[in-house]
Amino acid sequence: MASRSSAGNNPQLPKWRSAASISWRKAPQPALCAAMAAFDRIDILVNNAAIRVRRPFGEFTAEEFDQVVGVNLRAPFLVSQEVVPIMKANRAGRIINIASQMGSIAEQNLALYGLTKAALIHLTMSMAFELAPANIMVNAVSPGPTMTEYNVERTRQHPDYLAHKLQYLPSGRYCRPDEIAEVVRFLATTSASNIQGHNLVVDGGYVIH
Image (cartoon, one colour):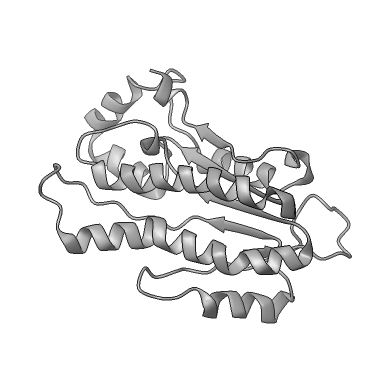
């Protein structure tokens, strides 16, 4: 979540930021109350929490289903609903959902994760359609393979895994975290003021291969 001060020198960039981790079992109100208490407004919401469980379809447990859906879909749904009245009062807002290229394609052992990300992409479009009259812009970013700390360590331990993934990337490399962050930043600026309901895939061409 972010609040942009009207006294800031650059209207494109948020001057203040607040990060909150949303448990799939908890309501979002405490985090939102803390942000409002600190900044008195919320202009930007980035729904970035996610977990994944890898199993062949038919082997997922009900508990795993509840956990993955709770974090990947329930949390952004409920947090966004809580933020909307605040943004309507501000007469503007930006909501950016971090989805995944797995929401657009199928991959082995990722049916549950892909399901939640596909649903998040659809939720993005539905929110954008309904909230546009309130000047609330809603978009999604779908990262592809990215060199997070986890993937750096994984590819170091399993070089064959990196070679396998690279054959599906026309760009010939993983995304860098800063490349994903820059896309999110762009969608939060006034430069993206007429982009609405879009799922921006940043994956080096993974989904077109």
